[in-house]
Image (cartoon, rainbow, N blue to C red; front, side):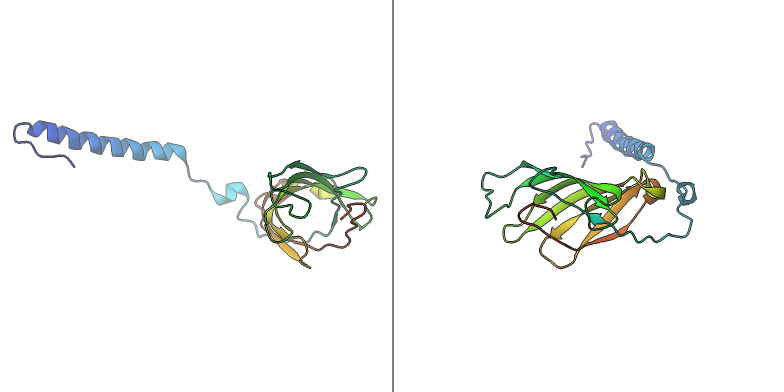
Length: 184
């Protein structure tokens, strides 16, 4: 706080004016940083659409044609304690449990083994669709996936194309897991 000096009253007044001017300029500058948008200009006044998508996600971690590859691991990561391992994935999404069935998209992203006590993944990925009206559109998912739970729920945090401003959730269920081939 400025002290009032009887010998220099104009210095105190100048300091107060300068502080006031700086705070005013800061307020003006912050308006340049953002602006108001009309929700209707972004298509937000339309009634929300609900979609239920059902497809099969194939994560192949060993054998021929792997779709998920480990790219990093902690110094303490072992087969019995995979905590700290990180993988990238480019997994096919198909219309039936058969990996050779019609491809509707890819699950592309990254996951990390993020628990020291259970097989639980932190997953960040996109469902990139290549079929029908969804071709070229994406849904973005970020969440926890406790692999051995019967049903896992992860949030949809956005999307692009027909899924712009998407929100919702995914439910994952393991249908099969072959330790020999690594096919999930």
